[in-house]
Amino acid sequence: MDAWRSRGGAAAVFQHRRQRRVRRVLASGSCCAALVLSSAVGLPGAADAAAAQARPAPVAAAVLTSPAHPTVTGVRTGRHTGFDRVVIDFTGGVPQHRERWLPRGERLRADGSGRVVPLQGDRVLEVVITGADRFQAARRTAPKLPAVRSTYLSPSFEATVQVGVGVRTADGSRGRVVRVVEIHGEHPRLVIDIAHPRR
Image (cartoon, rainbow, N blue to C red; front, top):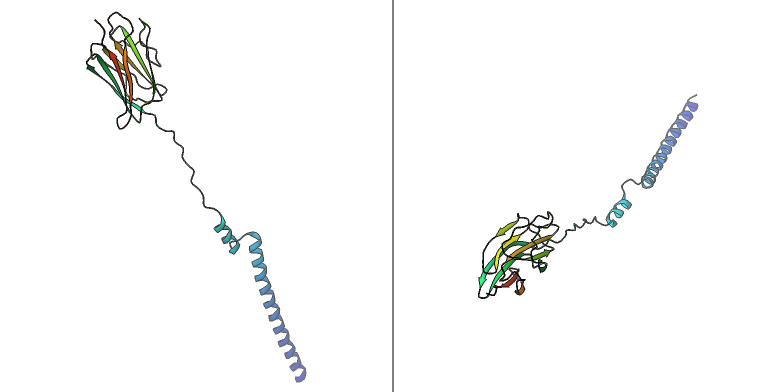
């Protein structure tokens, strides 16, 4: 009887130790399976860290801005020997411009509105400045010089500024422009010299 119990106890101990070994093997297998599963589903790991390092850094989007137009800042006049001078001042450079005498009897009309601009003198020299800005209100002056009797400076309309010069001539014929000069540099300006009327 004691021998049977002894054999039974030994068998139980052996069975217990065997179960412990099986549990250890299963536990280690579960750990391996978890590692494999984590790589398969993309959990953070060494591969993800390497991919993150290889990924290029985001680049800030460039902001495109259109260049600013030159700005018309004013019109000045002055009397000289034999001619009157009209000076149109700018900032940002001298833009494109064209000058023309309006037909005899024709009056200057403001760009945009088409309204008549009253100017002293019997002829009008129109200066159209394109690719330029002016944000102030329209301005008129009346220097009443021998040739230049009045001036008009418009605000910009579709990047165009209009300058009108009322000119007195001896007989109503077209006035004579002595010179048109662009001056560049720190103080850009357009200079127009108009001859005094012949007596």
